[in-house]
Image (cartoon, rainbow, N blue to C red; front, side, top):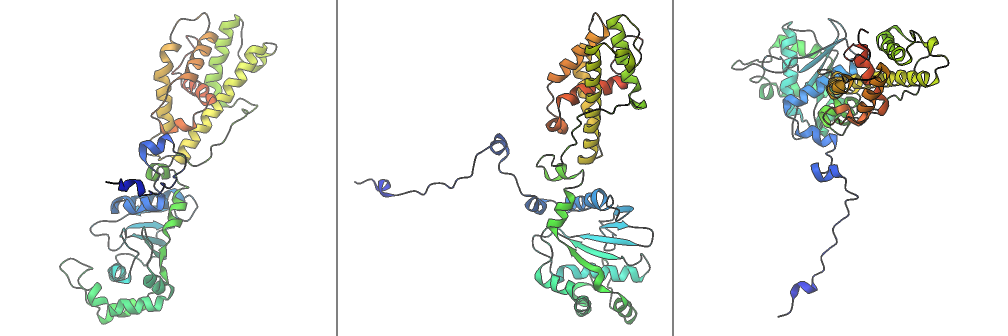
Length: 366
């Protein structure tokens, strides 16, 4: 019998490019627009609130934000206000398909009904936010507000009458119709999901929500300020004490280092490290969620890692400083999300942040 497989030509697998260890461990990265689709409805609402507070509020668009979603939200999910009178609504719809008119009419009806009762004023803008945006029919209606209003009136009995309040019918009475007709339906808009992601990426919540690492570039500190600021007084005072202990002379200010080139160079490196670590602290506040102080956690890890080294016996405080900072340079740090941004100067500087808080002491009594 002939070998049939010998005559079969199998196609060469398509190239997927050079693999990284991350690819092997976790698979190919999921694009943010696709990750948006697998959020739960509550996660999606939280993401929208993060975007409002972390981006729109920082841009100056609003001063307050509140998540109202859930039972009794009266057609409001995430609301953002300029003041007590001017506010916008972000209605979150986590559906598998682009939004269609039949799916949003009940939300329009809720806004009309509850605002007619004086439960709240009409919003300045009412945005529909969803992972796949608005479908073609809904988009067409949004572009023609009068048509959007007409179709809501025509479909009130089907989409609104029994769906605004549980177990209660809300007919479109003459009075409610008159109120509905007084509303400018140009307030209703749809927010593009890709724009939502792009703007969310500028918040400190993005990496935690979407992954992909810390995308923002960090400021590089190449020199420390020429003048010693008051905030540096404790750790620089500790360094002066360490230098005094080493030279057996009185050193209490920068001028006393004149002629002591080794100590002067060392002092300048320590100040550069302090400010480098300070920039890492600011980077953490700008790029990571504010519910946890990740820089503070990082300092705690370094303290645990170096404190035994700092508390050993040395011939001088200067030797203690060098032994501690050199150990910090090689300290293994894995878990903190700032580790990918950690530089050698940061490691030295964190020791001086700890000294500034007197958690590390170079010379007893200082």
